[in-house]
Image (cartoon, rainbow over all chains, first blue to last red; front, side):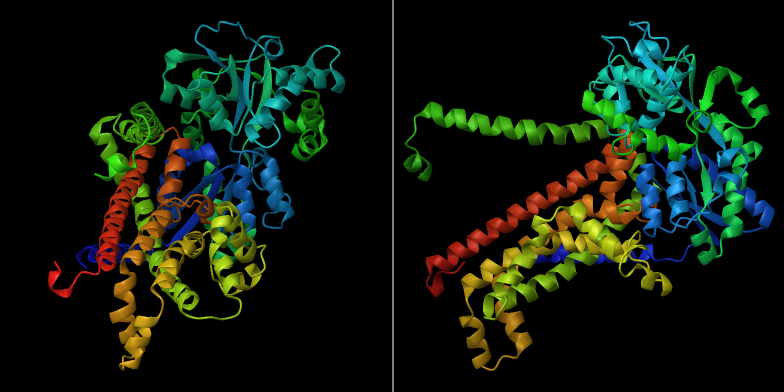
Length: 337
Length: 288
């Protein structure tokens, strides 16, 4: 029987540990921020800053918990009952989904400045060291013999931005129209040996499996790649024009009204536009909205012409309808492929 | 030796097969396992220990142990009750019950998780009622426990049913006719007979409870320091390029798997030894 004792005592020890789980939280208020996959570094720095700020301002101890995952998966969870006080996403479509479900105000984009997006980014090219294929602009990605690594345009934010960026570039060429854009994007997609499952997966494919000649990704991701894989391995190329990626934030009305945490949740998001919040964005290689902060960090944000989804496509829901729903332009191209 | 007796194949066939088997094992089991530890220790011991002592990693370990500590005993209770009913009694719907017990093996864990979201989620059948009464199930610890219970359910029962069926009910009937109470009969007669099988089931259920990813991922909500189990923590760190932290946590899971393997082998060995003793029908004075 001696052997039977050890699992019992192990279970007992585990139960004791479990007791620690239900210990009361030390904070006065706990906020939950449901966010997209790669925002962790940003909020890891930002949350303690806000806690300190709110302690000084309101004399209240706020603890912010984070939940990260694929952005669409996250809003789905919030709709299914994940009690997030605020959502901080990488695409308006995801917050729109919550607005449709009545969890977030329909006019959430007007509740905060700058389209409710405290920082922006843009799509850039990552190429192998020395840029052996001399890839300079979107048109080079459509040339035959170039392999392009990009996440799936239909169901990843990263992939959608890439798709729309190339489309917008084609529209802006002399004589550009929807037909020429479709053809142009089709050529780029033909150069994709595979569609990665997500932004991180695309990076791993390009950097670790060493597939492809160019990876299209967020400017902010390029810095993370440098941190992980070293600067000697690749170069960042800024195309002549690219898309403006906005990262909308919103208070989840249904949750804060129930928990009584509206004041803190609102303050938490407001603080993103403060000097400290904007500096933190810049330090995480996200382009700050604040002109002064942007100027201070100008060295790491080369000038690039950008267009927004609203300008060129009339908003995300229209863009999604035209390109990414079943039977949209992507499906037409994919069938051709 | 039995080896010589059983062996009628030429030596080269034997060695080829053996080499193949070992090469396969080394390639698909040994190398990945070694890689986990190599990657975890790539940044030296200090980075490894830091990865494990990170508050989020510790909370993940605590949650994983707590979930196993709740799910496994519950499964033991359900498993004994179910296998007892199936092995010792005849009733209508018995085969249906057996099928239901096997259901979690047949259903993909992700689907299992989604079922709980569909039932208890805010847009699910019981969601509005639960929200009204301020009960949180999905995206909280209860949901994780439920999902773990679901996927580990067959392990104990599946181990016990054939064992109890083979043993029949003669000994229990003898105990009762000699005046044993229900509990005495269970404690003194049934439990000693099934203890190794039970332990075997517990070990398997425990391993699955600690390692489950799919079902738990769906119902967890991924709140850091609150609803992240160890396997979920590994995935998150890996996606964040924190390879050392990810592999350090993975190494804890790998160690748990190794402990499970050793425990399983020990139990199997004891089971075989006892069965051998029983079938040999040793005279009473020769016991050792």
